[in-house]
Length: 206
Image (cartoon, rainbow, N blue to C red; front, side):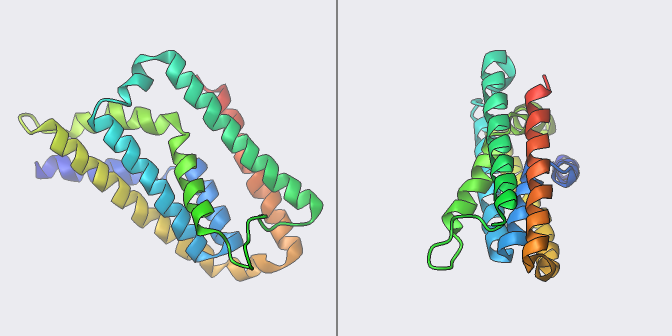
């Protein structure tokens, strides 16, 4: 049991550290809107991780593996979502308004940040494939499958949370540099380009 838990924790750490759409979105939110917004985005992302883990535990995400149509629909929808976010960032940079048009009375919407993190993770079918194909491999022989998968899902979300909170803290350290309008516009161009590229790559991958 202990060996399975430690092995899974190592695998989850490696998965968390691989840059992807969630990393790009979380860093962008942290740099442009501050640590609080970045942390709320992380919480939304981890809610998505838990949903994928629960789906794997109850066999729902197996549909993505078994059905090529379901996988492709989610893949294209996720790619479109990333490209749309990237295009918005590029448009704001072009207009010279690098801040998100989401403020209410000068405060950034935490609900939007949470929703953005959740949708970014939920729209990534590879997270579902990871959950359904990798999590069951760590269940020890003879152990109850459902409780173990639920435990692994919680561990996956917790490890992700620690990793991304660390990134948010580091982004907050350099945020002051990005408050100048010219620098913010460059940040929007870079983040927008990255998001569009990630979306195109997701759409092109089988």
